[in-house]
Amino acid sequence: MKKKIFNINNKKNKSKIVCLTAYSKNIASILDNFCDIVLVGDSLGSVLYNYKSTREVTLSSMIEHSKSVRMGIKKSLMVVDMPHNTYRNSKEALKNAKRIILKTKCDAIKLEGGRKIYNIVKVLIKNNIPVMGHLGLLPQSDKTFKFKGKKKSERNNILNDAKLLENAGVFSIVLECVESSLAKKITSEIKVPTIGIGSSNTCDGQILVFDDLVGLNPINVRFVKKYIDIRKNLKTAVSKYSKDVRRKKFPLKKHSY
Ligand code: KIV
Image 1 (cartoon, rainbow, N blue to C red):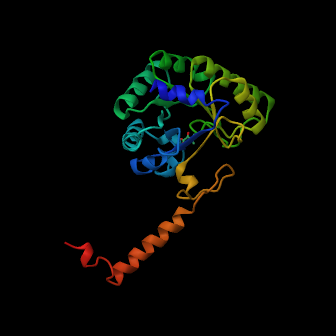
Image 2: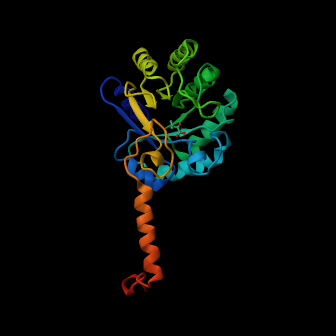
C-alpha cells in the first residue's frame, strides 16, 4: 500500500494521474487497467440512490459498495469516501476509518474539508491511515453548488486549506470545481498531487464519476465529457432482447437444457 501511494506521489510534475469512481466489481475491473486511483465516491448517493445529497449516504452502504469494488481491483490504489457525519471528531473518524479499512481492504480514505478537519486528518495519518483531501466544492456541506475561487477571500481560504492539508500529511488533494488559475496556483505551491474535477488540466491528475463519463447518469454539467452514450447502446440491446422474447426467437434450443 505504501508503495502504491509513493507511486502516486512520484507522478507529480512527471505524468498525469488518472482517476475514476466505481461503485461495483464489474466496472472496477475495467477501470483497474487504465486508472491509477479508483475512488468509491459517496456520489453513489445521488448517482445510484437518487438521494438529494451525499449527506444521506451511510457508512454501511459505502462499505458494501467498496467490498464489491475491492473484488475488481488488482493494481490501482483504492480510495473510499468517508460519508457525512462519520468524521465529526478524531475519535469518531478513527473508529470509522479503521472499520472501512478492515471491512473493505481499501488503501486510503477521502475526507472533505480543510482547517475544520486538520486535527482529524493528523490523527488518522498518525495511525497509519492514508488520507486523500478534498477541497473546493464540498458536496457534503455545500449549499450553492457553484464553482469556487471567484472571491479573493475564498481563494485565500482554499489555498491555505490546501497547505494545511499538505502539512497534516495527506497524499493528494481532490480540487472540485476550483477556478482554473487558483487550481494552477495550488498545484504549483504544494508538493502533493492535486486531482481535478472541473478544475482545469493544470492539476496533477483528473477524476470523473464513471457513470457520467459513459452517459449512464443522465446529467449535463460543464466539467463532464461523455465518452460514449452507453444508455443508447443499452437501450438497443434491451429492445432486441425484448423483441426476441416476444417473437419467440430467444431462447433457442442452444440456450436451453
Ligand atoms: O464522491 C465522489 O464521486 C467524489 C469525486 C467526484 C471526487 O468525491
